[in-house]
Length: 365
Image (cartoon, rainbow, N blue to C red):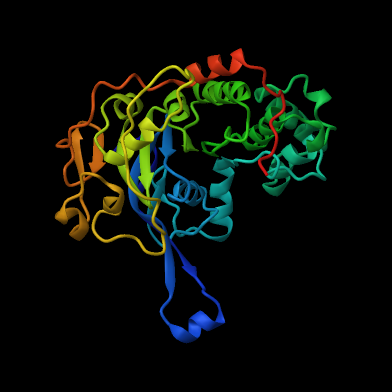
């Protein structure tokens, strides 16, 4: 690759899921239906950097993360990891690749086996990949991983089961399991969305510390732009399988151009009930990924859409250095500029500290 600092170079990546409508549907129509979960996206992630991937539920951001660690097989496209295309890897080559990449899942209540102790959970990837010559060596590696995840002293946690841990402690165990193999790239899929705001800060600072200490690049998947701003060097905004805007994090916050990005920014909660702000309106609900609108996929919800938006899919334009947008009228739409500043994640933490909160996050029913 031309740039040796690029860890992941994703080019025209697609993932379609074939849907079956059942026996009666198959009699009525023999045409297959596909969910366009990821529909032609391209981006790069560099060493020691964090790419935030944001968007509504159902936009395809989790599928994009799962593709990068090859938990899903791409329909088409290329994923160059350290210069080598891993899109078609199978067997031992795929296993070797997976040792280098790891994923932190959203729900610490579901991602940990309730029958495994903390030691059993963290040691499992070492056993799968044959890392360590003896039990004692693996035990030492598990202890170090727990301490990296700020579960100290590690001896107090190794024999515990998930039900004996708080939500934040469970997510730290999941992070320790990720760190046990010393990965070269991590996908964090909504890793703090199940946690109380005050607990989130500790988990996010832990991941930022790991990035600084070990120069590990992340893809940080979230629906919360304030969280993405706190964590990310660059932000990619995803809508119906497409990346509609990509830029450095502060550029997205202060100088975004896509109407969907502006709508996401206006939806960030303000921890001050007395503050009023305008909202960037959009119409309707997210369309089904089974039936992507023609032209620009956002046009049915966009207040600025014109005929060309319905007929032709916009190309990705670089309107400023490093700032890409998929919109026919990139830079031409005038948004309100008198809105208050977008609240930061620190604002949310301070607001949460003013009110009593439960120390243990509870699973959403």
